[in-house]
Image (tube, rainbow, N blue to C red; front, side, top):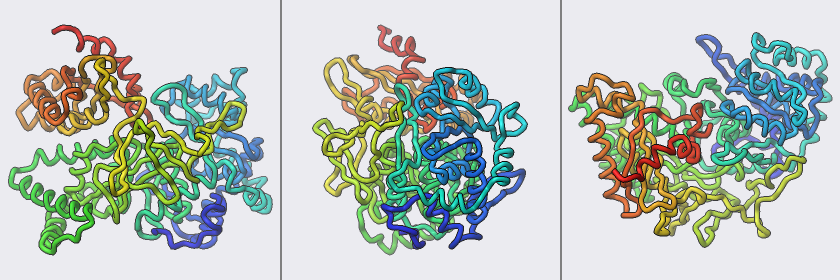
Length: 606
């Protein structure tokens, strides 16, 4: 267990305000929250955080926020967001973060469904989506607070709210108020990002989240008060756990990274001991490293590959629970010091003790790539509905490619069709209804159907197969996992993204997207002058290599799983263009609709 800190109550009786009170008393001067200002960092200690939270709570109360109210937020990873979240919790209100990439109709749905009367938004970009709702008679929204004062117009600003809170704040009322919070009270509502249909409101209690935090903390050893680089959206359950709730438990130090695209620069600067990335983040990091390696002299690449092989051999012994042979351990230690660490240090990855991923199956080639650098990515699996993690690999017990074993207190079983069912105290009570009540999603015995398909091996490790709703059923009645096929073809470094289609068809087709990081370097190394994405996607040398990649992937797949025809695309898919969710999952329906004619063309006679 990482945290040796005193808990102010048993885990099942903890509340978030109780943890903040402990931190402000017992770890008062430790850094709690930092964010970029100019060329440096501004930092608040735990005692300063609690004072600000008290003042903000008074400010929001003065605006009419009451216990049980839902308050919506659409801001990036900035201190106003983090502190507002805690202030609302201390009032007994329920903070709800909305993805910054949400379309106006999604914003409207959440505003109506949550019955929120107040939203706190960042600036002009967000106001364009929120202001029309103030005049919508079907939406209860009454007021907006704006973080960027220069863009607020006639709306109250975060700064003015803080100032009014300072004028009316009474510490005795603040202390009395948070002590009324009970473990069964709602801590947050997280709206699922919605790969299909409208987002659903997942209601999570203090007990759900506190048990999750305590049990997850037991899985890994980290230095006390370790830093966490916080860059994923707070609308994502992973960042709410890692960037708010676990740091409160651990009295850790949160470094806010307002621009997710700048996370690599933050890692290079801070050299963190822990790092979490969804699979697409690890894929892009791996592509960046491969692009650099491709430019190195052959002699240097040979030395690196030898070090990579040693690191993978060492990881294999750990994976099997074996003692690493002395000769391998010594050779690895030398290779790590002389070859790997100097290169990892350039990227800020040389101090990592814990690395993890979740939200979707991690391509095994990416896992093996990082294992070759001495970085074992502890893949985990869970859902918003399970307060985050259900299963996790740990340094003491892991299988590369699996998503680990169930966390303490959580049960798993497989339905007849392979769907994973789970139950336990960290599983949510149900989905929020528009009238404020909660609709249970579990069966009579408490089992929640996750929608994921998987298998359990003889050692209790879970291996994900696919999403139940995403399985392809061909015209011959065969079931195909699109993720399996996509991850197999993506093992070639030139292919960054893929979508496989074939439901109701006699064979599979695919849309493939060039890797934006590696493809230009790969092309330049082969004397191709025009490395623009569109030019590369049409270049004969690139097309020949992609054909080989598909052929190699098909050789490892059964006949039903093989890709018969495909089209290479040049434009990367992302949340802004709609093909990925804000948590970087593939929106298959959106991609299929966008490229419907192209997909249909792949089924027409040549």
